Amino acid sequence: MTSVQIARQAPKAQDTSCCTPSGSGPIPSVEKAQKLASLLKALAEPTRLQLLSLVAAHEGGEACVCDLTEPVGLSQPTVSHHLKILVEAGLLTREKRGVWAYYTLVPERVAHIASALGHFTAPQMPTAR
Amino acid sequence: MTSVQIARQAPKAQDTSCCTPSGSGPIPSVEKAQKLASLLKALAEPTRLQLLSLVAAHEGGEACVCDLTEPVGLSQPTVSHHLKILVEAGLLTREKRGVWAYYTLVPERVAHIASALGHFTAPQMPTAR
Image (cartoon, rainbow over all chains, first blue to last red; front, side, top):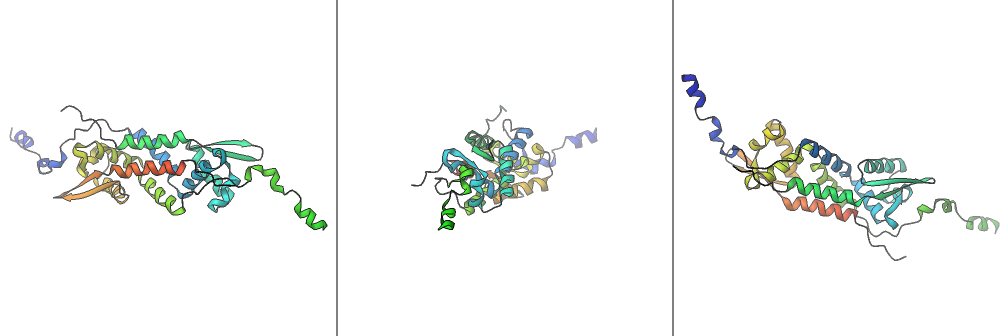
């Protein structure tokens, strides 16, 4: 009986009043966090941000790699590598026409990232207590 | 004269009509791209996204590390490491009170990222040609 009484004594957690369970609602799943992190990683590189900007600014919103190497001051293979990452993340589309591949911005994808960030950081509705 | 005539012949560039200079306006500077990339890098990690979400969802928009370890299933040193990166990026503020450090979301910083992304990918005004 004594051991039970000891076990029922107020736990140490009383000293850490900050640690009471919060009234937070559901938080985004690990899977959602992984997807968004993967998208953000594709963007989190200065050259890739500049390439996105260059494509968006180009006439008709479309540019080929030959338009992009000089402004960023890098070789075509390096620029193509960055463009590939942006295409894989769905931020650009790629279309081969003749000898050149043309890249177009997917603005909805950028908007999606901004919206997802807002969702991740918006206060959740508290659950009933 | 003949050599001049040859030089004036249509250059090879005619075969690569994609490569005429674009009418794009100013693109964001390398420095701006580096700053935004650095912010995005701080965000581009699943645990850090979850931590931001947990802090935002916590009662009063404030949480201490002791509230955060269990939901993400990581040790306190690991969680503190991620929180430090978020604080350094200006996405969270940290205030020490008693034995605990409390973290609060800086929603303006998240909004700034979303807005900067929009700026980077908005079509620029063409310059006069």
